[in-house]
Length: 163
Ligand code: GDP
Ligand code: MG
Image (tube, rainbow, N blue to C red; front, top):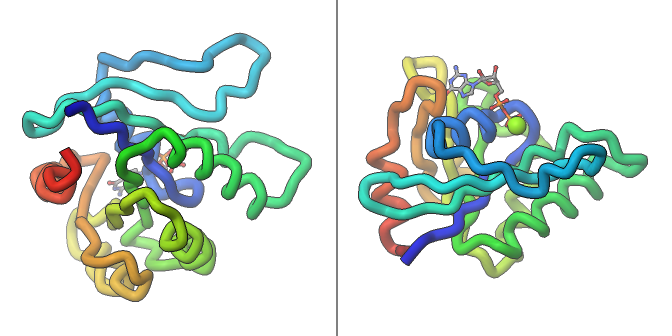
């Protein structure tokens, strides 16, 4: 079956880079009405034989007159509501941040399965962050480099049980 995956995580971890990597030119914008906040976009992708609908939660950086925490929650809720699996990205180079912990705690309470992805894991700079990621309590992190296209086979492995 076609899997709907939502890419979630704090700003700057590489969500949109992963979205573009997966969806490439087959990008289909959704909810793109001019003047309306485009708070998420979706596209179709095929990864290792798995048909995916990928949702990028792009709206975290949008301006709301609300707390960051509230924005994160609302954004994540919308995306996860529609998803079979959430890809929770952290930045392996930056390590695990308080915001990541906050997000992880919230995701652990939800019903949507979560795959923890340690992005920016190319080279040696991501190793400490990859180890730190275990403390989020979301299982083994999948090391990935969305920018360089490394680790996609591991991502397929992680997605297969949900297909
Ligand atoms: P988002 O805010 O989570 O959507 O993050 P973006 O996709 O906009 O990426 C934020 C920054 O991280 C950009 O400068 C990207 O080029 C960079 N980035 C994304 N993926 C990788 C990666 O795998 N490795 C490295 N080193 N940088 C990355
Ligand atoms: Mg983005």
